[in-house]
Image (cartoon, rainbow, N blue to C red; front, side):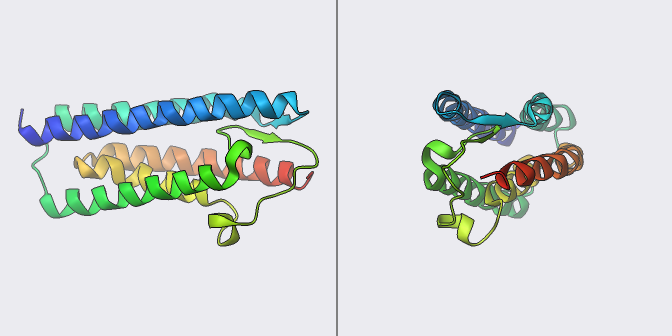
Length: 172
């Protein structure tokens, strides 16, 4: 295998480590929100989101190693920049929402909706980061099949998730 396969694998593993950091933040925020009387909505779709994210990471590595596509430096570099921008947007969302940020849909009555940071520009900026990263990350390693498969599944689950989240936010 070529060196670029190893570098791509390292990148995906770094993204996986970042996901674990996100989950730790989300777990802590979930406990706090529920203790403050928060109500979780749409819990049934959460396992699907987790499976999709695992599929994105594992599929990207597996496709890159099994297909062993040639390195496309212009594509890889462009998509790497896009992935980094998506990560920046995601952490901007996390820092803006602070303890209200979560990977689940939990509404704490009386807290209100945040309308600063990226949320003053878009209603769901974190989902933009998810969509962009989900397409760009596999393409860093020319994993076209994973990019398309994840994006298709992600579009379906995000349509459901955004509907659930909008209904929950109307209760604030």
